[in-house]
Amino acid sequence: MFELIPRPRWTMAPGVVHVPDWLDVDAQRRLVSAAQEWSRDGPGARHATLPGGARMSVSSVCLGWHWIPYRYSRTRDDQDGSPVQPFPSWLADLGARAVADAYDSEIDYRPDVALVNSYRGDARLGMHQDREERAPDPVVSLSLGAACVFRIGSPHHRRGPWHDVELCSGDLIVFGGEHRLAYHGVPKLLPDRDVPDIGVAPGERINLTLRVSGLG
Image 1 (cartoon, rainbow, N blue to C red):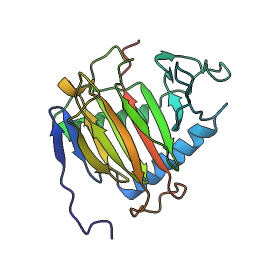
Image 2: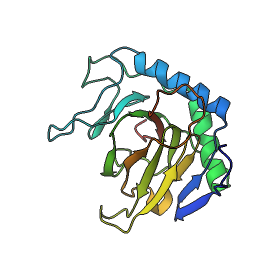
Image 3: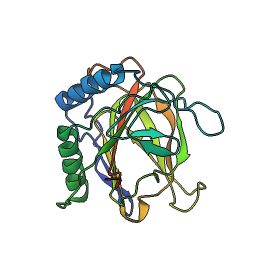
Image 4: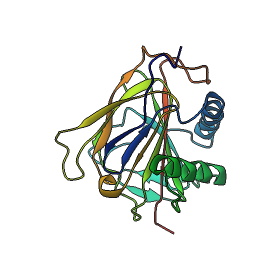
């Protein structure tokens, strides 16, 4: 049922590669289980508050470094101040394999920070840059559960033209090079798409974003 329409890999823009169905169902189940365990640790997942006071509709938990708009900390400063959860070595290995497969080249890639985001209902992510890192290494994005529209544009401004792609459970996006700082976002979920039985809640999308902080 999930393979009726072939979805070839696509270089959306220089340095931006979409690899459909990169994670098999067993790998998706393992990641969902890990994400659910991380979200229960300590104060759990939270809806981060932006500097202007608005709360993000996406809930998130961090590994390695705790992201607070717009900085990183080793402690969960906007929660209870406890140490951030460690970044597991197996997840770094998965990130390295993702970059190598996307770019079809062996690259020394060792991510040390992850944002694990949960989208439910009308949650979305506005156009933004991932620019708190001090390293130029690519960003790895892994999708689990409900499909969504992923939008990526220019590194210079939020305005179009944009490239939109439908991301399904198991898909991989890597963006780096001249598009490492491209504005990108998730304007909507697509809850009517089929989802394999991987343990997500109905209509939920989980996204793992892996980055190299460059913070030492």
